[in-house]
Image (cartoon, rainbow, N blue to C red; front, side, top):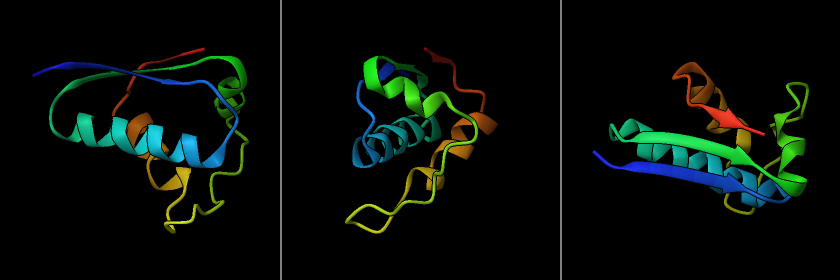
Amino acid sequence: MAKYLFILGKDDNEAATRCFQFAKVAKDKGHEVEMFFIDGGVMWADKNRDLTQKTVTGDSPGDYLPGLVEKEVPCGV
């Protein structure tokens, strides 16, 4: 088992989607995962944020973030 820290540093839908996706994949594989939002990335800490905006690949932050919350992945701001 490895430890991963995913840092989201900008308010960008594509970057957030990938950050959440990679964190979820690592957690699903049994690794220890933490996330940290800095700079513009702190905008993703808003629980009222729209998570449905699709990326060019057709997925969205809402496809991954709820699973991370459910698994209680720590997130610092």
